[in-house]
Length: 496
Image (cartoon, rainbow, N blue to C red; front, side):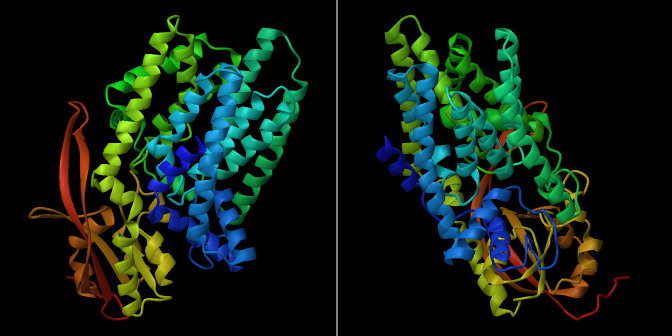
């Protein structure tokens, strides 16, 4: 099983994704003594993975290791740890000697989504690790109060880790009320979580001068529950097709017919799924927001198959689930999809732009652009982030900075360079995000900036659902190019 997990994870190796490099910039600046900042001297909470940034920054400071390399290695090690944790939890839920526990671990080991996000450079494997440790400790016969420590680790790794804490508190309250027991041990777990978590939030509010949520929360925009439902539906269909209905059915059956331990996992799955729906899902491929939930669902699915009265039927259903996972993985590896290239080769997308900016003398200069990770990390620029991750004003644009912008604000910052992303749908040319579209339509911008070069980007496709009422989905192919613009003079002229 360990070999299987390692092999599947190894297949997903490649370059880290651009969003990971945003965290890498924070980690590097922290290690270099500049603090938790993206642009030096500018305290904005442009990450949502505090503990991950802290770990990577600490490794760089104490060992000098490459941050991207450290992120991939840690992720690969955690992938194996997570599969072993799934096995341990499944044995507690289903039974110590049950072969069904192994089935749950194998489902996790061969899952494309879990494997891919283990080596993308983001905090996903660490967050999943804390989730699984918290669940395992919660289900332990001894030292149960320690689940509060793991829940704290999850909440420091991702803001929604607090949802895990709340889910387990709710489940524990139900159990205690039903069994008429006193919560002495549980009070310790709650305090272990609550006191440090409150102190952490007090610190971050003071340090960044922000509100309860990180700046990245606002930069996401307001996609809403309908988009969240569509996100979950599409990701389940992409991974399992019609077999997704079977996965949901046996998972629910395992929760209903299983022991109290299975109920804890189900509360977490329901709470986590509700959170994904409310925030509107995620735009990245391979179901990043579902990865922390899938192993728990796999455990419940294995428990559901075990609870079917006719053992051969249960085994047949599990065989279908496993076969679907393997076929999904084989098709992904054999094909040449944009999703696979996006996951493994983003250095090909952004490194030419970083090198060109260096050639143009942009190191240390202020540059306005949207995808800030790779380009900032490798070119040493300061940024006006037009997607708002590290910009408070743009993050709070109505509808989100991907759909709305403030061109006057960006130009008022007087960036020396501007990097635009242009999508070409055949003969139709559109800006990648709201800022890029505003630039293409602005006469004043053309008066003050000249186009230095166009850098070839990548070919991609998108599944759009413009008409939500009729649920009409369309696959559109497009090409992306990067335009690098330089300010003509130190002043900004106004058009007439």
